[in-house]
Image 1 (cartoon, one colour):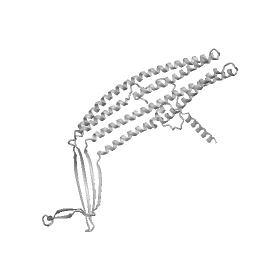
Image 2 (cartoon, rainbow, N blue to C red):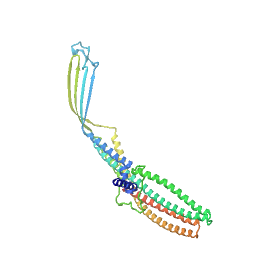
Image 3 (tube, rainbow, N blue to C red):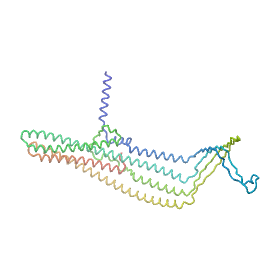
Image 4 (cartoon, helix red, strand yellow):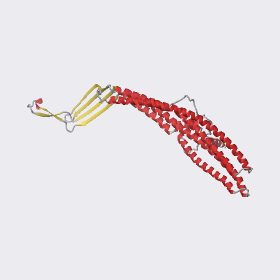
Amino acid sequence: MKIYLSSGLFFLLLGHAAMAQKYDLASCLRMADSANTQIRSAQLNMAINESQRSAYLSSRLPSLNFAGDYKYNAIIPGQVVPAQFFGGPAGSFAEVKFGVPYVLSNTVQLNQILFNSQLNYGLAALRINSEIVKIQRDMTIQDVKYQVANTFFILQGLYQQLSFIAGNITYADQILKNMDLMVAQGMLVQTEADKIRINRLNLENTAANLQATKSQLEELLKILIGVDPKTAIALQDDQMVQQSLLVDKNATNLFAVQLLEQQKLMAQEEAKGIKMGYLPNVNLYGIYQYNYNMNPETDFRTGIDGAFVGLRVDWNLFDGFDKHHKAAVNALKQEQLEMQTALVQQQLQLQIDQNKRLIDVKVNSLELAKEQLKLAEAVHQHANLKFTEGLIGTNDLLQAQTGLEQAQTNVVAAYVALRQAELEYLKSNGNIK
């Protein structure tokens, strides 16, 4: 019985621990790394590219082919030759048939590439494409992590806003309880209490809308980090601190520039491939053939074999200036990529500088919003005290309450704006960890 009770208590505590588990931003980002479908797809693209490279490398190996041709000559084909070959009169012709009814032909052919003008270009292109796919994977990871972090921080803002609203509804209930008693005793008209009740209904409506938005964002976050949609999710509080996301500002991963650099290398290799196209291709090949001939009527059976080794040269001596025009197009493409790289570098640097300045602005905005919230809380507390003492009316109390609610909303909005500014800065640097 003690063992059963101990086991039951252990699993009960384990269940509570699992239910109480909360996700912070770091754990959400780690889960997205392994479970997000977009990241997984980008990783599969890398595996596909590597498989394509392996397949292309195999083209350098020799190839061995077998061909079998087994036929029955129902009518042995013939040919007309001069009859005098066989002692006949000159000017006349005779029909001569060549072959036997059954011919079994077997051929084995070996091919080996000795030199192919496009082989090295193809290998270089696959190597560069592998780097391009890797950069695209890293860009996908950054995009997904941006979505995860942005959703996480918006949810943090929603949780805080809902907490503010819950406190405001509790306060409204307390005020209404006292006001309803005063209305029942004839000390206050019903209209005054209804003003507070209208404000409470507005708070409930706002809370309902925020709850719907919260549910949608939680479902989105589950999809992004690979959590079962049926599983409840809880997030750790972020405490609304400033700049905790920022990393070393000197560490940058400008993926857009890296992608253009690889495209420039690809264009350069393409130019080399065009030049190499003027050279011939050389292949070594060997063939072994064995033919077995049978004529059942005469019991004739014989096998004839043959083998030879050859060197094949394919050389396009004139292509109608096709490679010349391709080289001209390639030169223009390289010039275009140079200009695009310079432009993107300038744009990214400008974006980084702007995002850095924007963070400082948002930090000040959050600090200002917090100070305004403290003042609004003090004003509301003072108004509540005066209202209790009967020194001010309901309109003045509602005005103070509205100011408090606006200050609360401003704090949440400033917090989310700061977090989003930090994310934009990290994304422009390619440093969302």
